Length: 359
Image (cartoon, rainbow, N blue to C red; front, side, top):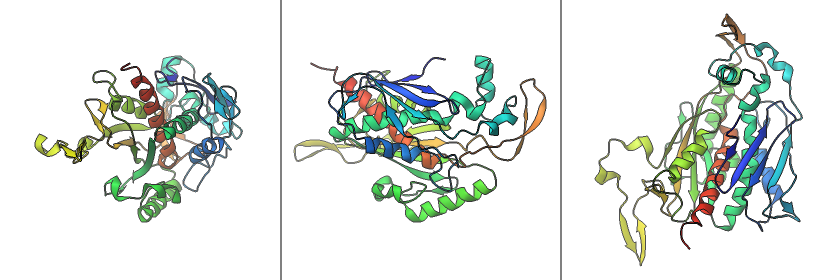
């Protein structure tokens, strides 16, 4: 299996399976001299970990990271940063009934056809538990970006039929951690949480949308042809489990507008060139323009549902599967820090790449 590495100059190579001994990674290209806030990194992992509320999977994991290299006396050395998060609460027997059966819309069939073998326990390498490594690397990237004044905030903007209607600028994004769904509208968040809990009780799952805003990004990140910044962000987001779509700026929502209505107009504000609107989402010609970068990521309902579904076994015999185990009825609350992590890694990587543009 290849393609377990993400990034160009800032690179994460991850390893591990859902029910193996550990999830971990090696980070190359992290700048030296960055103060490593261990409490912050653990806080980011806590936002992703299972068992944090009644609307997430009941699997209990501390998800405590152990750094193995690249940090000395609380500061990055510039050497590869190795780390591991040990699995402690696997219930592998929960998956015995699906060892030779393909779960609908899951990776089971394609994985088996590709490799000829698969670890059926929790999905193995195709499990979203792999995203632990991304959150650790993303937390480190956030610490570096913090020194540059770059801030990344993701939040749940839709769960099933419940949609955050206003523009992100109309909400206080510092309040997303005040509810279990991580939505900035507290009233809507309560409705979302109730809906997820209802879906969970049915043994079913539901999807939705996570929005993300990047503030303080400098002008010039990205290349105009194959290294477009929005393409890199799209690649990062579409690599996350259960993601089905990505749009930035106004995206699909303004296709009825003409160019004269869609364009962001430049003007001179006391000697500084700026824009009257930000419909482009902070990226023009594949290059960041200094405005807020904002995008939306669509997540499908979790494929594993706790109800009977028709399927086939590995020999092609039709059968009925009722999955067991501990699964999220909705991935969005735990996926918020994953979206932030992938955005942080992408922005730091492209910031470092931009340093090679001109002497």
